[in-house]
Length: 91
Image 1 (cartoon, helix red, strand yellow):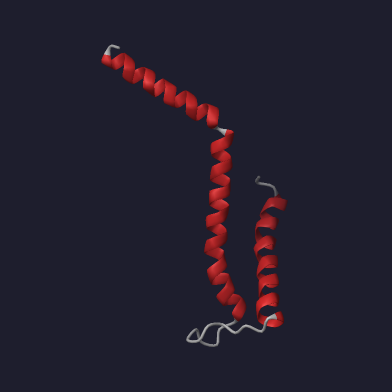
Image 2 (tube, one colour; image 1 turned 120 degrees about the vertical axis):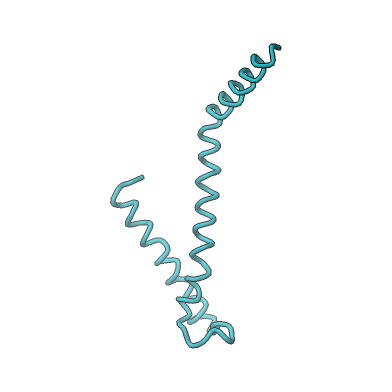
């Protein structure tokens, strides 16, 4: 995290995926963009739809792994909160 290779991978990975999707869908399968989308490039059309999806999936994957890595800390915080509520009520 934070290395030059990490930043480089963050740029190269979506570009390689975009190029491969563009090759498969526009060249191999010869699929045009949907009607009414104008004469814009097919790769721009793909990128506009895939970029939000990639951001969403990356966020969910990172947050779930973070939750698992810090499970003990979350459990301790819940127990401490419960103990403070319990002592405030005089139980």
